[in-house]
Image 1 (cartoon, rainbow, N blue to C red):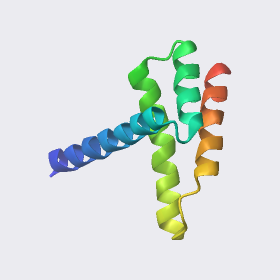
Image 2 (spheres, rainbow, N blue to C red; image 1 turned 45 degrees about the vertical axis):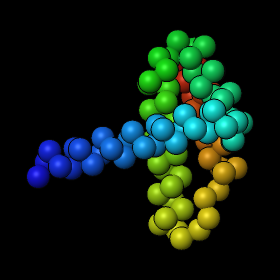
Image 3 (tube, helix red, strand yellow; image 1 turned 135 degrees about the horizontal axis):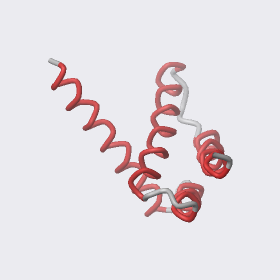
Length: 90
């Protein structure tokens, strides 16, 4: 049972990372491309940067689902930018 949950978690994480990669490729939101370049420029590995960005995306999807509201791309973009800024202060 635990293996199944782990497989589901891994699948969800991969789907989120894929979504972030698509956002970067599509340039929407444009902050996705800026943040990945910023994080990599700070020495964060590409995979780790994508995972951090995917975590932000997951949190915003959860809020949207829990509150039954549309996905707030502006709040998501703002939090992506904060992710890059938070990494510089570590």
